[in-house]
Length: 328
Length: 255
Image 1 (cartoon, rainbow over the protein chains, first blue to last red):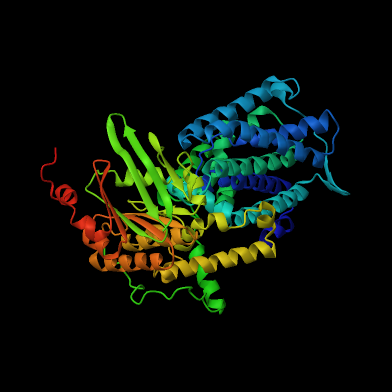
Image 2 (image 1 turned 90 degrees about the vertical axis):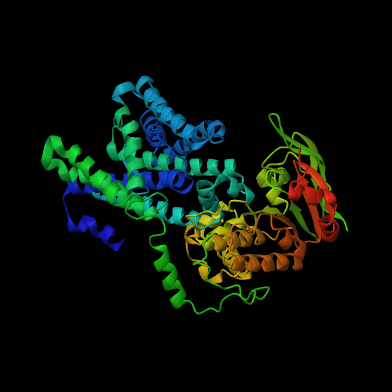
């Protein structure tokens, strides 16, 4: 993290920095989608819709209504959550496959709306989005956006990890692993699926709202199906359900195509090949869930000398018997 | 003794098949009630009706006098009825400890703000919960396995983990669907002991089992199902000598 904070000091190159903050934005989106796909196991193929809602709300309110950028974040989030509820209520009751189809449609609908309404500027989009100011700090240079999105990213990571290790996160994982058994735990599965979908919507729209001033001009092609796929790819490459994986995956899907720019026309081909190689060699992602957990627990046990909790009832005499050799 | 869970004329039809016909059953408080019967007798269907997974075609289920016939599975669980599944249903990519914590879902703090900030109150409640989870894991003899992925445990251990997951919820009644099926004889003895101890701790137990000897050893009440009907019910000794039961098990004169 210290290293990430120092990046702008190591390179003054604005191009590198703008690639870097684009990567950060994609990572933020990947972390948001990870709540939905990674934790809760709901396949969302239209995640860019929430990104678009955030960006367009900010664009319209700041250009047409002259709101300050910061004030536009909340309305964007509100609209995204309302959309999530409208989409989620009927479809989250169905199997995950249906959700995939509906979210795919939702993504396309949002993009189509954006390119046809006059309020959204039609195909040309919205331009002249004002400068983002926080108090007296002006965020306009690549460096300042780099730090802004770094803060957002750290915040999202923090929230994800906190929620993951709580009742909510556990309920999401249970739903992903086995819906029937989850119900036997008393988990209201529809409600918790909705929470996950809404959580993703919030993160996606916040990222969109802050990305609009970074671009200064937004147009429909930035929020299409390919963007949704890119975010999903970041989650899959990194490892479903792993925040660290989402960070790595998000970095890879933005930085690799840029790094291959010297190959000109062939760069996406090479990018595709690299992705295939990654998925063939590490099918569960680069940093699958629980990759660190073993280490973390071991460390905790080493430094934790609190005596183990006293059982309410003494364990049975022969209970702790390793049954690994006894199959069914 | 008062009835904890009661069914009245419970019937369940799948198309033309009568999975359950007019089953009236009463599970008493503090009992260890075994439900036995040949394959296809409707034992698991009965459990699914009791826990909200199936909605019966007719009849009622009531728990502590409250009608729960149409309640959702999650709703039934929240009343303090916990179950295990015939083909164990663990959450494979969660650790053993997390599986058990999931069982304590309704006891955990759900305040989103407290969770995101990580308030001391939230941390304390999670720590308490972890201790509870470790206690129930130790109760079934799995304390050492807490950090492993549940999917990596051998079969017998997964069965015991499912028990721990049901127990952490502090249930009033646990329904165990063939807890000893498919495990070795050593594990079977172990499980039998654990089940007896659950019962000794004041939790009512209903269990489906094929192994008649096992059931007769620990059960306080036995109900025998055959073709979706109750053919005998009572104390283990009486049921064992019931001619209908012997006929159902021996397969003589079955139409």
